[in-house]
Image (tube, rainbow over all chains, first blue to last red; front, side):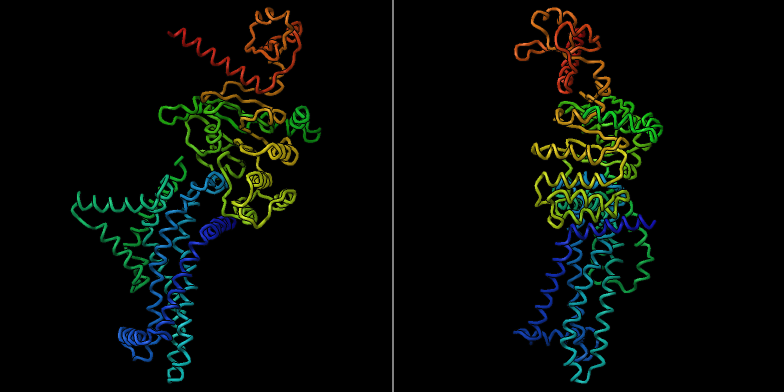
Length: 278
Length: 319
């Protein structure tokens, strides 16, 4: 059991090595952009806009304007969710396809790793590892503005609020990770779908995976006169940005059960395709 | 060299003799009626194979004969019909478990170019529990492969050396090599086979090699397998080959007599008639000229020419 865990750990590490550019560059770019925007709002020519944004953020949270200083960085962390979604989709599209494209497929097949383990390592990377890579970046983007604002807040007699804001930033980072892997589980059918086409396609796997989603949606409208599929996709991806009100009720929901079953079937399909797509 | 190899395989010493003889009675590869088609093309047409533990077998055939398909079938990389057992396992049902026992280097299979050789060793060490990292590092220390350079920056010869070092550090029972030296210059090809023989083969392990460069592996082999049109057309040991087949450089005055004996193949070489005979007594042939054991490449050509001749005659009969 321990040795199998070690083997699976090595597979996850291999994914991080292989896709290091994709996994590190995206959050780095988003972080730098957010920090640049913050500097422009606080120090640069957009100071007035920054003040307005603080007041708006404070009113959204129902707090006094001074304490609303904590709100802006929290809102600022939101772009990480769609950026991470995009990173995951690109990763899922290329991860199995890449082995065949760079002709290393037979080398990987010469290792005592089953196709099921190979596919599961990719799914676990998308659900847990990619969010874990993003979390430190989110935390940095939350802490930098707060650390900058903390002395000013303390001078204005809001030292307690500043301390609370720092704790809130840590809390928000953990919540970000929880929401993202929870969302990853809910999106397991999408993960399975992209892995299936990554294992199947001889070229342009992204077009195959995305095109087939459009075709399915059109077929549903045409044959069943319903938009359940479109509704489901919209609901799943909205949750990615706005999170959930209750983590435990989402985890033990009917939607989660359906997602796990459907996702499991599609992951098994991806393993089958990897095995027999010669 | 050939004798040394046969000795390594058959005369391992008194202490281990019984064990080795027992193992030799076992076949690590057993295949019955393997069939595989790609559309209308029949890549494997009832392949029958028995490969003894501890042998070095050469799988030899022309382009499109079914060599790679046969090897892929043995490794569980494609689905085939028929009975198949490798090291006591069915590769179709347990490919990943089989890979604990079997290593392979494929002609088109190259190492992941984004890795460094150090990362490659790290990964294989954690994934393959029969991998001996110290042995791999020792083997690599005799090469000029840098540990932290990406594989995409290494020459083809270095990549092959790296792959061979990794494979040789795995304590596997069966090694399958499919055109392992394709595209390498003669220095690397020679080094590759020398290392395989000196540092890897110990009489316990079984090696199957498929290649077009028959002359380079001839001295390594203990067994020959000729494949053509998806069927095994010859399966014998080098000893049996020496007993069964003879090549005669016929004296000019014996040309007619040589033809009357019905050689399986004949050709003109430097003004001399050279004939290959199947199952003829050596004493009888010695009267015709100089007798020797044919080279594997010559036997291969003779055998395939014979197969074609039989097929042509068969077709003419059908017409």
